[in-house]
Length: 165
Image 1 (cartoon, helix red, strand yellow):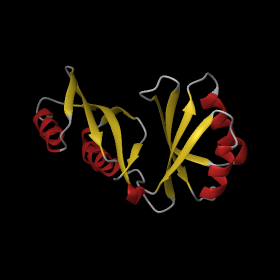
Image 2: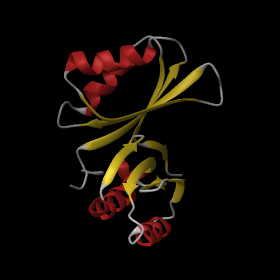
Image 3: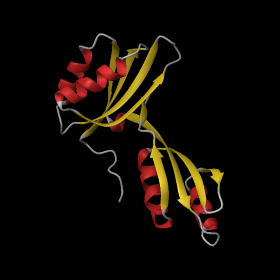
Image 4: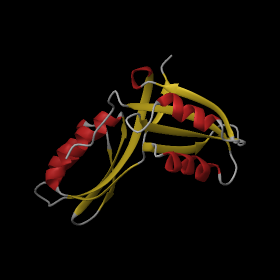
């Protein structure tokens, strides 16, 4: 099953917050209380240790963007909110997947990983663990193509984004 990717009802918010305990819980609580749907969430510190950046992909079918931004802006620890339409943003995501790899099919999997510019990060007797980074659509396509080889485990980080210049 192919994961749903960037569509017109998804929008990216890049939220700069103070790097303090409980901030993520307050943001998640706000979304939960208001019934807003978070499609994807990634958090990391910035180059300034006082701040972290939350990249939140929101589902606009659950609430209007203006309402989400207005509610986020009310939180004390939120410093800045940038709205990024998917067409105006560079998006990336990381995928790690462990795939069964019988000796007769291992070469096919390795070749597929190479085509998608991924890396083999672990080799076991009966499996390979692969890593890919890139646009969400690219990762969706890769995931769909490796599914027949039997995915043992898979994890995706969620999207991060910056505005196009």
